Each structure stands twice: as structure tokens, then as C-alpha cells.
Length: 65
Length: 285
Image (cartoon, rainbow over all chains, first blue to last red; front, side):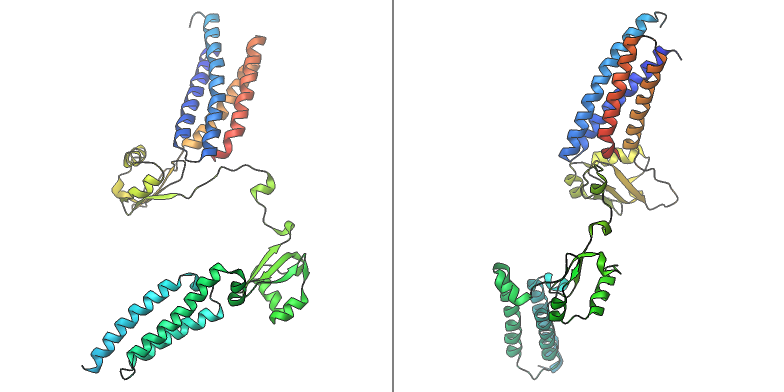
């Protein structure tokens, strides 16, 4: 596996984490837990944006992919 | 009227009367009877017994006596609810036996407790050394409640400074294969959700003996058929594991890349995920 595909794999894992967190945040009854889930979801979505940018960068550098 | 019919009628009336009286006197009596309440209970039962088996007695007398023995304890209880001083008088006050780790000999004597009695009561609470106790109080009901010294108290999450996710009471959503709609509604879930969860694990609702859901919507199941292994809910542990894996991946990318810009980006995000893991892990356990 090239670095590009590895980073892409990580990027999709991050996306899945974000989705799971959103589901949990909606399901959880407790206010405090809901807040925690939302807060973490924000952090993860920041990471997602950074990684998205990185995925584009790498695909530029490795034009064969 | 033959006597046996009278006895049957009397029994039934007295049972009904006694039933309602006991109900109105409240369940509090059962858990903490003081002497007065115990005696009034026994007397009520006694009156009912005497007038049940003896058809020659005057039934009206029985009713009067029972009502008196019901009204007085009932009234005392109601007044005691309102007035603290009256409560102290009828229900008694608690007596401090051990304060600041020191045994109050005078109070022991006042309550008629010997040192052996005190030690026995402490042993009841699993305390074998009187010096382990910070505070002990004898309740009016006769039980001794003990606060051990701080270092002898069981360790709690608060002592260790661990954050725990708050838990609410779990709800039983399926009993004997029947869905309990009310408890589902308490968790703001619906039968469709239950069906999906069961489908996910390939289980028919008829086979579910008991299913309970916690307030995060995790379902725990016991089946009629004990040969089938039920998978535990995996959603949360899986999420935590994925987060940890992503963080490790980012660390690896950081080490692998030579571009300083990418390096700092990976580093920054790996730290962010670590922070996220620290925040969320109490809720995912």
C-alpha cells in the first residue's frame, strides 16, 4: 500500500468515527454525555478537514493514483 | 343464621377492614417499626382474631375498637410529619455513640448499651476495631449506623479523580417475548428500533426472554434458547478502538513523512484525536 492509500484509509476511518459519534450523540439521553459527544465530534470533524486537504495534496504528488 | 355463616361473614369483613387499615397506615411501618407502631399492629390483629372466631361477641364493638386503634396511630403519624418536636417525642431521637472517633460512654449508659453490645453492633457493620469509626449513631429503630474514618471508607471514583459517565436506570424492554412499549417510550425509542437491533444480531423476538436497554440505547439480551451465544453490544468499544487506531495511524504517517508541513499536520491532528479520546473514553466504557 502506498502512503496515499493509507492516508485515504485513515481519512475514511475518521469519517466513520464522526458518523458513529453523531449517532451516539443523538441516541444518548443524558445532557452531559450529549455535550461530550458533540464536542468530540467537532474535534474529529476538524481532523477530517485537515486530512481531506492532505489527501488532495498527496494525490497531487502521486499523480499515478 | 347458623354460626358458621356468621363466622364467614365476620372473617371476610374483618379481612377487608384490616387490609385497608394496614394499607392506609403505610408501608413505612413495615420497614421501621417503633414500639408503639408494633403494638398497635399486634392489637389490630388481635381484635380481628378474637372477633372472627367468637360469634357471641358484639361485632360493633370490634369495629369501634379497631377504628380507635387505627385512628390514633394514623393521627400520630400525620402530626409527626408536621411537627419536629412531636416527632422527637413519638419516634424518639437518635443517640450519638461515637463522635470524632471517641466513644460517648454516657450515651451508651443512657440507652442501656453495654460495651459488648456496641462492639457487636459494630461487628454487624464489619468493623472490628472501634478506633476505625469516626461517627456512629443509634437510630430510634435500634439500628446502629456507622461512618468509618476516611481511610477506612471504600475507594470511590471520586477519590481517584476519575470521570465516569452518568448512568440512568436501564429499562426492561422485552419480557417473556413481549415488547413493553411504555419502557421503550421512557428511553424515547420505538418498536422499530428494537426490531432493527434484533435483526442486526439475527434474533427473533419470540426467542427473547429478557431484553434491557441502557440510556445510551445499548441492548442487552437473554434468550429462551440458552445454546445460542448472544453477542454483547460492540458499538461503543468499536468506536473507541477505531479512534485509537486512527491516532496510531497518524503517528505512523508523522514518522514516515519527510515533508515538514505534513509532519506538523499529522502531529497536530494526532494530538487532537488523543484529546478527543481522553474526553470521550469515560462515555464509551
